[in-house]
Amino acid sequence: MSGRRFFKGISMKASNFVFFVLVSIAVCSGFCWAYPKPAIAPALNHWNIDVEFSKPQQILVDIPTDGQNAPPRRFWYVILTLTNNSAVDAPFFPSCDLMTDTFKIVPAGTDVMGIVFKQIKLTQQGRYPFLESLEQVDDRILQGADNARDIAIIWPDFDGEAKNIDLFIGGLSNEVVMINHPIKKDKAGNPEKVYLRKTLQLKYAIGGDKKFRSDSRLEYKTRQWVMR
Image (cartoon, rainbow, N blue to C red; front, side, top):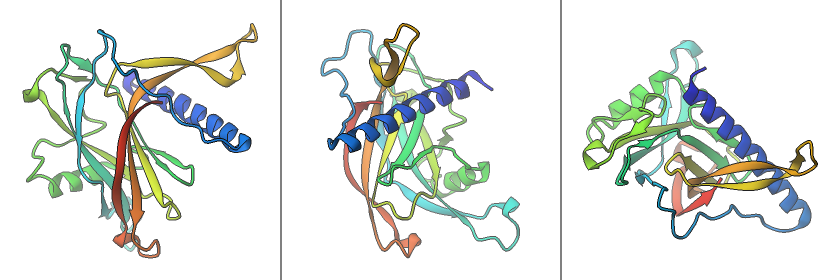
């Protein structure tokens, strides 16, 4: 396993577990839990990557391994344009999750074959001629607009019962915060520490009749930075 995949796997598992624990506590106690907020004034050693994002789109792809008569699979994707205007070349270890309001979390790239990205790249080649997939992009974003990167983030189709989704894009900042784990204790009986990263949260409502998935569309609601 590469260092990058290991880092992403640990980050996603830890943050997702903490999220579910906190949500469960909030539901049982009758309160609504919210993510911690980043610092209003970032520290001098903090860097952030500027991001522009396209409207999420769906695409149907025939997967050869599914068999000749198998129906095409549906995927959703968003394209990020990342520009590093900070004072340093920024290491880039992204974690990108799609979360439904039915409390299902899908990490980007789950069950996504290479042919899916190839079809997206072909569709978007006019606007994004240098489009890269999340798995192929370098582990460092160099400084300056000349080094901006266009990256496709891809998820398989999500729960048809969902009415809203959140996209969480991590790895765009080195700002972290340490919190106490709500349940786990160390050997001394003290709460274990959990590290959360500054993460971009994009919120969308799902329009269209759920019976006709091809008509579904994601309507942009808002964006914010959270610690996750």
